Length: 351
Image (cartoon, rainbow, N blue to C red; front, side, top):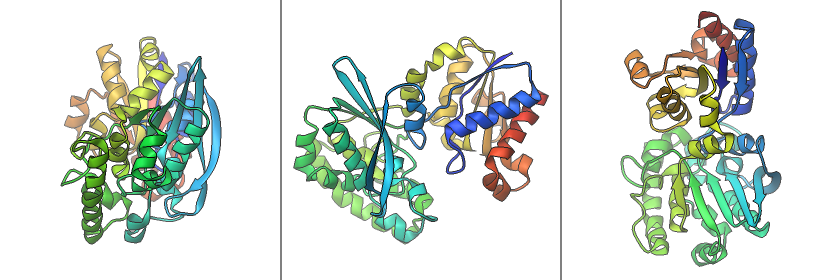
């Protein structure tokens, strides 16, 4: 049997590349005769640059401001083809939750910003990029992209700097900027915000949205994806960005569909398989593509909270959790690599 191994990252515990390696190693122990093809994936969040850099481009590194202002090293990618130069930036490299230096708190939720992402965009422009693709996801910030705008010289300065650049926001998050389904209310709690902090973040972004709307010449707050990466999506859209699916960017770069056409099984995974999984993320995109070809999909995740009915309706053949085989959430996170290998071996033996 030939299987495609194509996981997303497992939160802060495993990159997509490391997850693919662990799954392959475990699966080989369970079914040594299978042919495995490893192609790590991303939806624009953590691992976006790593996955693309494994396929093409010139990997570069910059020292930029992290989410709380301390300097961090952030990688990005420049791909030159003829007279076209495309830069791929991963916002989590500059303002990711993993850059906080500790767990998120209400204080970090209020303070974290996207200034470092703006510095990466400026570096890409200075390097001659004619197109900049910004992967959105995994951010610690909920600043509506104000930090990015500030780093680029303010509203007018940012618009001037990017006037000849094609800007793309790569994200599978469809949330608007404001309201019950917006950045602060939906994602703020994941970034350490308590109810009072969520209200403060919402209030601040509502005020900032007036400036973004003025920059765009229209109301962009309800645009799909405006709430991605703590509202960074809104700032990019206001600057003229087109929103595309991050998973699709990776799928096209890795030749995903052609690979699926040539295998008997798709094995994917992520940190948490839940209802958000079904809303266009890597696992859902892969399952849909495989389902069209009548190919089963296996999901290996840190945790699985979908019901058996939801799993079946999504077209997933089976979904298994590291927590179940590890016996605890703590061990699943502390020993993620080994436990994912164990899970892959177990599922392979039963397949």
